[in-house]
Image (cartoon, rainbow, N blue to C red; front, side, top):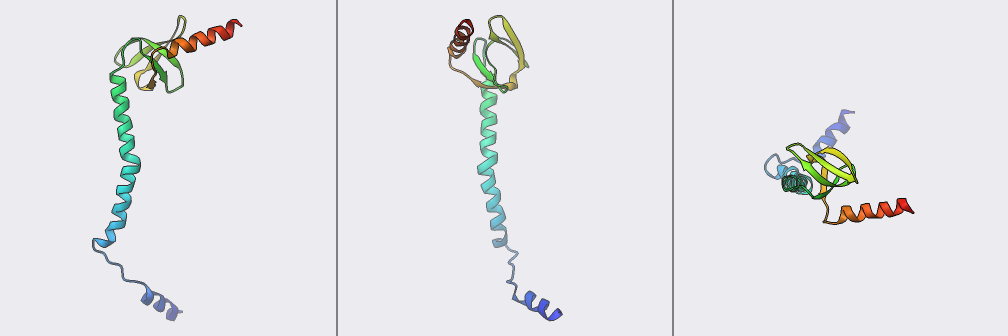
Length: 117
């Protein structure tokens, strides 16, 4: 049995422990940085800027999918009107997107006409 094992070890190519051996792992790390880490940090920076630029009267969509208009805000929470005289409070970080002006009005008008029919 030892005869076959010694042949297998003798036929194995020599591994170069120098910089050539580190090129592939470093290439994988660079690839993952540009594929995953960099875009994620860019999105986080854009969201932080969006939350900082929010003002009263802006129409937003939360992470739960709720569309509404910002009525009141403080450092951590927003008061959002989701329907006539219906308000909810959400954390600022739960806002996903700022919608164009008129989106909230168009959607509420559509739901009012559907419920009256």
